[in-house]
Image (cartoon, rainbow, N blue to C red; front, side, top):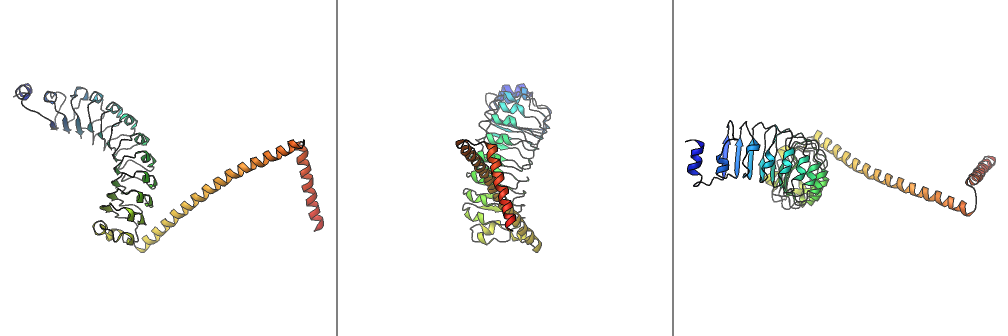
Amino acid sequence: MNESQLIDKYQTKVVLKMLKLEQQQDISSIKFVQAFKVTTLFVKKCFSINFQEAPTNILNLTVNQCQLQTVDGIQQMVQLQALDLQNNQLENIEELKYLINLTTLKLCDNKISDIKALDKLCCIQNLSLDHNPLQNISTVSTLHTLVELNLTKTNLSNISFIKSLLQLQRLTLSQNIITDISILMYNTKLTYLHLGQNQIIDISSLQLLQRLEQLILSDNQIVHIDALTELANLNHLDLRNNFIISVECIEHHRFYDDYYDTNYNRPSAQQVQYSNTLTKIFKANRLFNTQLFCIKKLKSKIAIYTQLFKDSINQCLSQANMDNQYFYEQMKSILQSNVHFDMATQ
């Protein structure tokens, strides 16, 4: 029975909601995707994908491991709500800006560096960009509807863009080069946070994330964990491979025995010395920044007072009808006479 016969026989009898295809040579001519009004299509290891001929009734589309290099033509699939393009060879995703109904987008394991096209996705809630060589991540800051975000292994060092994503509940930033996480204090709706394999020392800002249920901080440079005592809703915490010296502050927590393995955190004498040094460096750096701020503030005030002093002198000279040059000559004469007087008395 050929494809046309299948359609004629079952089109009025079968309601087909999901279709999975794997290792097909060409799927662009599969007519029953359209005929049976399939809304969910899963394609894997199919190496001839033609989005221009794809059915427009699809709501959920997954195209994995198909060596895709382009998504030309996908802009016609405006009904798409969920799109999964993981494990391909994508570099340019410009056409995705037309898919304004997307709520879920997965682009993991591609070659994407530019994500400017995503700023048009006003309904996006779940975004996965992990394992891509991203160059500019600032576009993500405009996606205010995001609830879940994955940026694992994307060369991240600065996460200031996270501040504007106030609806975030799940955030994964593992395998990056992040050192400062203070900006996370604004993301108070977070329930899941993965910061493993970074270069984090200070976690004090996490004490404000009262809704956290799962927190992964493994493979960092954390020394003190006092801030975690405030997280009453935590039920999973991973602190492996850090420089934690004492866990007294959380020993009485209800989940202590379930998450903490001393074999991974018992420091040697050398580690203790190293962690103490890190702490001192961190404190010194914080003190330096405070002093630098004070110096800049003082410098600004000096400049203001200097200008006020000059203005006052000029005003006095103006009122006394004195010429500036005459005034300075008189002052110079007085100063010189004082110097001569001091020398004579000695």
